[in-house]
Each structure stands twice: as structure tokens, then as C-alpha cells.
Length: 438
Image 1 (cartoon, rainbow, N blue to C red):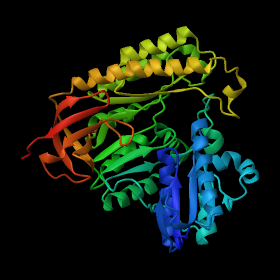
Image 2 (cartoon, rainbow, N blue to C red):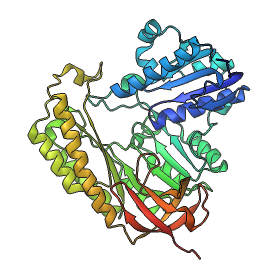
Image 3 (cartoon, rainbow, N blue to C red):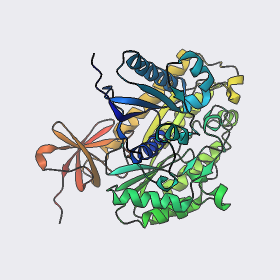
Image 4 (cartoon, one colour):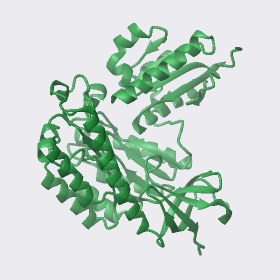
């Protein structure tokens, strides 16, 4: 097969979470400034150089990363690409093993050494481009990473091993990056970090997320600010105040709770109790009326009994979360829980996942049916077939619900805000019609 790649083109393939997306976008901006043509997530072997930004968080993510590396190793062996580099979390954790097992990769760089790949390919990292991004999301929204690493030491989590301790990005730099994104047409900022609520403690001696949100809300062009990955322990009251009082801050929060049984919360080293979790959820709903709460749960952690799971199931039934994900526990080497007996059989873990998700499916349908007839301001993401796809302030892109609007109702554009009335509902999607404005 004839090689289609160009010598000055680099394909950056990003796997894993939204924080990886931001890292790749910074790397791509540096490479572009050095004169490279950069494409992203291409499977066409149309670039001479491929850089894979990997995930190494859980087993499935590691497997996807390895398979992707091997796919491009094969392309290299066939002469379809010239150079292959691996960066990110997987190579941070397993660089020595990867070098031994997959020597065809030209070099490996960890998640704490993104400068390394830029220096290898471009000669130097340019500090003046620290806030520059090559967006890989649609032009109207972007992820904004405000810190790196994590100081919490949850028993099951390898993030501190991979990314290190919590390090905040200076506020002026975050604001400058957001301003540049807004000038480029971004209307929705999705604030991400391993724990966004801890922002500023290392730099300013106290949590500064509320102040940062207020400064982001003052940026011209920004319409929505969405908050992801908020750790429940020590949740700042000031953030709740900002969510209530600042119209640009969406009434939406992603707050991974993992479990509700005190025995499990203690074993997981979450630093919080059932009583405090419920009190926080009550406070969020009381002080930010209409807030949509997204959470993530873990089942099958070592020692989880049928009684623990029943307590979790009842918690989900009572709380009626707007958005919920659940995954089975898997041991990660180097973490405290890896030293515990993994005593919940895999088939039991999967059965518990299915029970929670079946319950949540019923809750989601009931929640959605109550929205029929309601009117919402939405942002348009894209067109798919006969429908435009949009979201409310209560829905984050890629992971939450979407509103399908018949394309026959008028011409819409990505990034456009419109008013929509909900006409029908399914478990995880809504249907709507445009409402005349003005």
C-alpha cells in the first residue's frame, strides 16, 4: 500500500477523560506553532508521525490504550507511518514495561512530561503559548482544566500515583486561557480537574473555586459555565452561593459519591459519612433550586455485603439522581485496596451494576416524562439526520441527555441558543420543538 502521510503532519490520538483532551490540545498548539500540520484522532494513516495520549486509570482503559498502540505499531511496520510516540497516563505508570514489550514505539513520555514530547518533536516548549489550545471539541464548548493531580487518597484510586499531588493552575493563567477560548467562539466552559473544589489551596492557602467561577462569568462571550468532578468532602458553601446567584454558572454538578454505606465509605477512605452526604445533597437542592446532580457509584468494592448494596440501592431510589453512572470495582496495583481481598465475585459485581442501572433507567424515564410540556433554553450541538441535537444547562456534552429537535422546524447552527418546548421523552433522551422568540 502506498504511503499517504506527509512529513510535516502529526496525528494526535487522545484516549481517556476530558482532562486528557485538554492536555492533547495544549500539545497540539505547541506543535502547530513549530510549523507542523496537526490532525487529531485520525485512523487514516495520513500523518507521518502519530502521538497517542493514553489512559491508564482502569483495566478497560488500559486495554484500549494498548490496542491503539498496537494498531499504529502495525501501521508503522507496513510503512504507513514513520514515527510513533506514546504519552500520558499509561506510559507514566508502565514506561519500563512498555519499552520492553513494545519497542517499536519511538519513545514514551509520561503524564507529567508533556513538554518532553514537544521538545522531542518541536525542539522547545514555548512558555508564551501556555494557554494556547487546538480545540478538538466542537467550537462552541471547551474543557477548562484548572488543576492537576489529587491530594485525596481514596483506597482504590491510582490517580495520585499517575498524576501526583494537587497542583492548581494560577488563576490569572486560567482566566487568560478562558478569555482566549471565548475570543475563539467558545460559549460554554466545562471546568474540570481531579477535584475542582480543592482549587487554589496550594497557591492561595484556601479554596478559591468560587472566586474563579465569578471571574470566568465576567468574561464576554461566555454564556454557560459547567462544573465537573467535585469531591463531596469539605464542599465549599461559597461554590453553592455562586451557583445560586450567578446566572452563567449552570445549575448542574458532577459529584462522584461512589457509595453510601458507612462501612464502604470508610473502607474506600472517602473521608465522609452517609449523614454528611445526604446533608450536602439536601443543601444543594435547597439552595440551588432545580439543580441537576450527576454522580458515579462503585459496586463490588472489597467487603461490600448484600446489606451494603441494598443500602446503596435504596439510596439511589430515594435520591432520584438526574444522571448516574456505575461501574464494578477492579483492583489497581499500587493502591491500598489492591492489598485487600477482592472478595466479591465478578458475576455478583456485574449483577449489582445491572440492578442499579435498571433502577436508574426507570428513574430517568419518570424524571423525563415530568419535563414534557416544559420550556428550556438550549444550546445546539450538531445535526444528525432529521434532527438537530441540543442540550439544556442540565446536560453536559457526550455523557448526558440530549434534546432532539426536528430539522424541518427551521435551520439551526452549532453554538446557537434557542428556546425549546419538550414534546416527548425516553429514558435518556428528550424530543422538543422550537418556540418562537421575540
